[in-house]
Length: 561
Ligand SMILES: Nc1nc2c(ncn2[C@@H]2O[C@H](COP(=O)(O)OP(=O)(O)OP(=O)(O)O)[C@@H](O)[C@H]2O)c(=O)[nH]1
Ligand SMILES: [Mg+2]
Image (cartoon, rainbow, N blue to C red; front, side, top):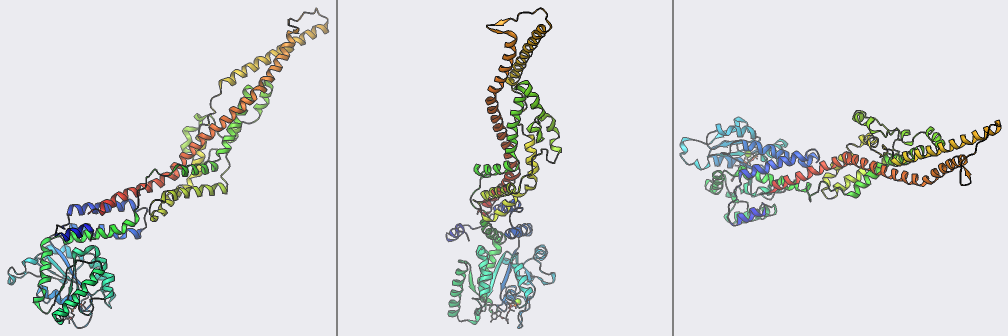
């Protein structure tokens, strides 16, 4: 019994179960199961599943009937009480134990409307009886709507009896536990049964039967002791009374209790509400503090992208980009002779089959599942580093929430591990490395180099022409001079020296540019790789965390009373 319920009861307040609220709690339980089913072990959820199904069936069946079971150990007098309450000999009472093997039912009022309920409970048609007779007049009217069950014994030598009792105890609305003066302290009765009804104190009655065999003083002593045991079972406040199947006068209190139950028509709802309490208590272990879905911290994601970057060959591509920048810069701005030699060497990026012209590759990207680059596959150490960081993501997500979610988070984190290499390779191939556009100054310097070379060639030609004129003895011509230096010499030497000087002076600038290009490529590649990590590792983990958050929210409703 919840604290609220206890207080209400102590104050004599209304402890009725609101059917609408019960349905809302059951809906929330169903929601809880829907979101947790893929992630939590079946064992933790089986009781909740059974309850949802059972509650659905019971609520759909007659609410005008209250099913009360007489349960207890063999020989306690269940069948005798059943017959005495019905005032008919319906269930055989015997000397040979156990006597009752299957449940018997007695319906107060017409049988027909109760039949579907009894079909569902599983009482054989031939064991169903009616307590409705013209002779009774209105004597039995107060019990109209009662469906009383006489159960087999739970402590039977017949294993089947116990199974049947357990099944029926799960379905009935209220239980009257029948104990006798010899066995009222029985360990199985208290540990295996009564204690399990802790959440059902409002639908539990305990009777000390065969009280006619005790003196009134002894009856009081035994009843007091029985109540003490019930307290220990967590059944404080449960009605406990003395009865006798042999003396009709000693059944009044039980009859009145049953009349009250029937009149209230609350037992079925109270029973289910108690079941929801029990299940909610069990499920509480699977839910802990809230877990922010996006709270896989940056450090963990950074670790993951570090490992993914290494395994995707990001450093190699960044180095190749740096090399490609240098290669292309020299090919564009170098001294024209050197440029020619440069162009014979392959471009480092093209060597990795990393096209720098994105227009060629993008449309077909999705259709090509295999690697597009010629980067070497990740080695064992890199693969295991990826495995470790993936597990770290799962562990990080699992840390604040109950242990039972850890396997699901781990499975989720690893669910797309097999697709990672291809995805990484595609991401690397797709990344714009920033090498598409040729810097303007390369063209300008390239032109200048050509001008200088042309100047040198013109100078050389001029000098050669002057030399030829002299050799052939043709009329010589004076070379124009700039200061003291003849113009052709100036053109030749100036062109050569300035060209070389330009190439040498630009070297550090090219190197700095190459480093910058390498860094930029690395940043972009890391961003792509991090995106893959988010999609393939973090997203599935977040899905589980999302389910956890939904389950948490649903359980709050299940637990509300
Ligand atoms: N004196 C006395 N004897 C009773 C009382 N109730 C039952 N008995 C006797 O106790 C014996 C067992 O009674 P049953 O009603 O068959 O007991 P049960 O609980 O149905 O037993 P099972 O069907 O074997 O589980 C019978 O001999 C009854 O006559 C009672 O209130 N007073
Ligand atoms: Mg019996």
